[in-house]
Image (tube, rainbow, N blue to C red; front, side, top):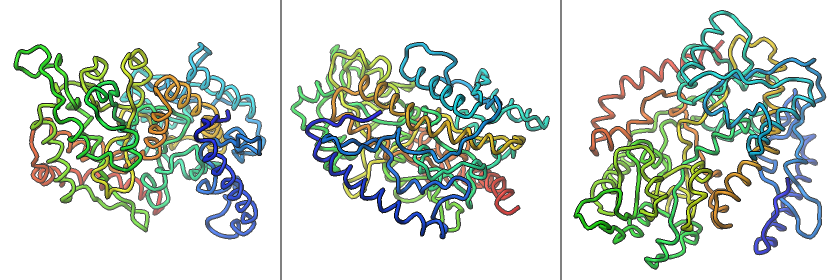
Length: 506
């Protein structure tokens, strides 16, 4: 697939393409030198560090040489696996990584064609062993390891459950598998910066599974309501770096209308901001530049959760929830989304996949936005991925590591080349986004995704305290909550680090 830039962006795209060509030429000249040092090609694959490679399609509109995903080599040698089956154990979100047959849906057919292409190329079969739910998936994986079986070549399941299972010592590091190169663009860069411990990456996010895109947190903005209030162009606000928490307050002031005139705030009224009391506020923790753990120079992690910034974030979220008539929340899941569908709110929290469903039928024009920044001093827009997304792992009982690493890399690479563009463009951009500006906003969103070591491996711990404090206890006293829970949290994380240390110190 080659992206077709719009006319107004053609000149800018041409410059980027020319710059990219120059970079690639420099890479080619430097490769012989790079292979002599630690940062060069991997001995197994001879592939280039992904930080120097294109991570999106580019095209020159004047007919010059194009650089596309399809042209980007995966670096894998020719191989024949004799018809061996690569079996993925998973559930629920499997619609984002597997398809048994063609059905005319863009994502489904792209997944099916990916598996066929990889299977035909390397004489292998790709299969799914599907369970009823995430807990069953993990229980099945544990039982398989305890029995010493080599039945499942990969496990792809709910990230929280997968992270918790690491303490059961059932996963081997994906980073140790032959042919796996986590520097490549089909693996999230966050695998190395946020999920790798002393050089070992047990679980990894890759483009084999599209749930990591679909569950990305965002905000929706009703452009028709905004126009009726004479509000400024929201896209210019985002581009200028001015889409902040204070801007949310500013835009929402004066938007509440008691539509039915009963003097009570209910779901029939009109609001400025609608948010559910479950996970929506949770996403703002990362959006405002916080995280649970931060990787240190020796590859270990430091707990950076509690500080004055956390206290300030909790206080702001509590205030916007409880002290402004323009905010609506009803204690249920997806409150913001439901209000937004009814044209009953200017701004709503949500996640990207919502654009694939009922929002396609919305008559009102809407924008897809990144979550706001804490203030204009914050350099970038950040977001996190809703915890229901999947992540991949490989069981310790897997024997043919060459085959598993090879096919896993091939599937992720082919997904990056064909499935991700299909999902991102066809399912999200062209079907879900209403205009080119929203497409630009989606790009900002995806570039700002963060995966946190404490979220992935912390179970139902500190990642959710923020949410519990504001919603369940309706309090701003995160300090007392932290003091009450930190010993239990530290004990749990010690077990996680111990599981990693078995591999890193062995």
